[in-house]
Structures are given as structure tokens and as C-alpha cells.
Image 1 (cartoon, rainbow, N blue to C red):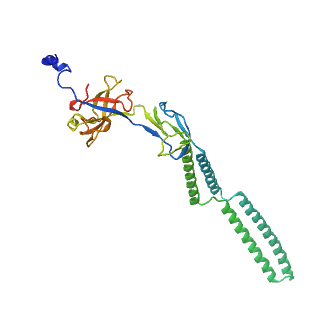
Image 2 (cartoon, helix red, strand yellow; image 1 turned 135 degrees about the vertical axis):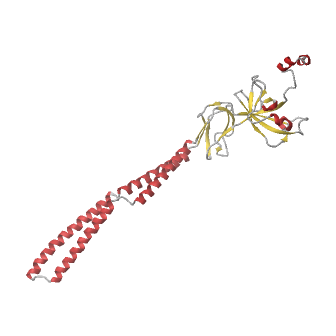
Image 3 (spheres, rainbow, N blue to C red; image 1 turned 30 degrees about the vertical axis):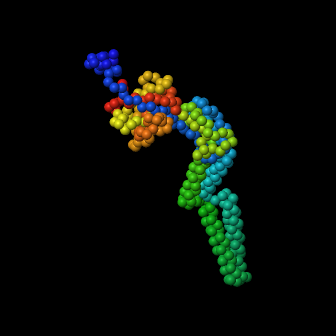
Length: 320
């Protein structure tokens, strides 16, 4: 009957029964799982999810031991406080106690100058009457000059003590403060990472480590399959490659899939390989094929490992 219908040109052009069917490739669904792991080694205190649980963005996945990270943060905060105090000290000059000591020395030195000035006046009167020698008067003059020089030196020291540190010293201290702040922020961030959270919504595919075990960058705790993070994987012979192109939409079918399910080709292998064991058959095992990957255009509820049939439309275009 189909041959009779197809013999009528108009009907044959309209009906899908006419002409050869597009070849079909058998493939499977592969998931792009995300393994959630600590940024640094730490003991796992609690795993807050179970296999099959749905997780939302930001949901707690696991809690890690925090004590060492808390100690590191306290040390970093103390370093910031010390660096900030250093900057403030340099900007203010010497400590108040040191300035008070210099002021006391200046008062004492000035009192000594006053005492020597009175003694010089007395010695000058005695010298005028001839009661003391000129040598004694010169001795008093020398002591007075030395005392006045001492006062000047102490006053200069006090002026320097009241000045802030040199600009380069202050800049170096401020740079050290910025470095300490950065180290503190890094320590705070590392502490926050002791709680593992989901970065994307999805389903917990597997629990890889449990409470009491050691997690780390190479020791993930949980595997999550994010929503929509699946792709179709299928293999085609070389003579079918001209039908396919990156970005091309293809129809596919599977158990439970809608009738208009489509996927977009995202990868075409540059070289062939033998038919993989996952779709092994006695007929196909010796054939060289090319791996093709395609992303579903919508969430069709596909599960990793699910078998799909992909229609390979001719001419590099998907069906409309």
C-alpha cells in the first residue's frame, strides 16, 4: 500500500512513508557530575545530605572540622591589630612616656642653667672685689655654656620625638598593615569554606566520604548531578559524518521522552575509535566509529545511563 501511495507524486511528497528513513544511532545519556570537595584537607564532621536528595543553590552539603581554621583566623586578626598599632605609633611620634622623660630632663637642665647663672653673678661680684681669681670666673662661664648646650640638645631631642616617623617608614608600615589585612581576609574565607554548599541545584548522585573521614581537594565528599547537566553520547560510522555538524539539532527518542525531543550537537570527535563496550554487539564490535555528543534543548528528565535513539537527518539540518 505504501508503494502505491508513494507512486502518486503529490501524496508522496507530503507523506513520510515515501523515501528511505533517516538512519538511527543508538546512544546513551551521560551526566556531568560535580564533585564537591574541600579546598584543603580537613576532617568531615557531618554529611547533611543523602543519595537521591535534591539540593538547592547554597544548601549545606557537609560540615568540616573548624578548629585549626579558627586558630589561624585569630592569629591573623592579632597580626592586623599589631600592624595597625605600629602605623599609629609612627604617625604620632614617640610614646608619651618618652616625651615626658625628655621634658623632665629639660626642666632639670634649665634649673642647672639658672643655678649657674646665679653663681656666675656672685663670682663676678667677688672678682670685682678681688676675692676670686679670673680662672675661677672662667670655670663658671665654661660650666654655664656646657649647661646651656645640654638644654639645647634636649630641646632638639624633644622636637624630634614629637615628630612622626619618616614618610618611607610610615609607608612600609602601612604596606605591612595591608598585607596583614589580606592575610586575615584569606583566613576568614578559608574558615567559611569549612562548610560545603551546593553551587548549583541538582540531585545528590553519590556520597563519596562520610563523617570521620578526611576530605580534601583530591578527596571529594559528595557527587551532585546539576539540573540539565546531561548530554547524549552516540557513535556513527565515517560515511554518516557528512550528515552532522556542530550546532545541528537532532531528534531523539527514549523511554519516557516526549515525541519532539531534540538535542544540539556540541562535540564531534576528530578521530575514530572502536565501538565502545557500552554499545557492544557482535555485528558492530570491529567497526571504527566517531563519538558525537549533543546537549538536550530542554529538561526532558533524562537520567545517566538511559538509552536513546538518535535520528541522523541528512543535509546537516534537524527535522522541523
